[in-house]
Image (cartoon, rainbow, N blue to C red; front, top):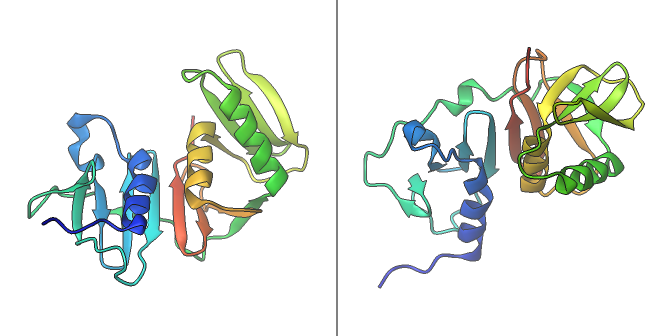
Length: 193
């Protein structure tokens, strides 16, 4: 008889699955990696790293594809620690709860194939929609300059299940940005010209 999967296990894999790649030519990015103290997934543009609870998920270490553990030795996974900005990375700005709510509503209203980016810059927070560069100024407060895919940002915020404001950390505007919430970390790669 197969062991029953706990609700935490199902939640853990379900929360990480959207961060895996769908492209079978990038096979190592299609897996969820489960380690002793954390589980993570990346599609190369974003990553989610979740803290594991103390053995209560019944999940063996390894790589999982669609909820099934790969046979040992499994795929060679990317070196995720090489791209995670350190926890001490400076906080460049804080996303307030009203701004997060506005971003979620606007991105949810867009058609699936419409590209949307969020620009945090000298003129404040702006959502750029589509090829016409239609801009919605969400927050006129000046901030550090960085541009990210709006859907990836919303996916990261949703996966962290943050309620309230969230600090955004990065060093180089073309380097990965880091967001932390209760021991979990989301990474989103910025769009650089």
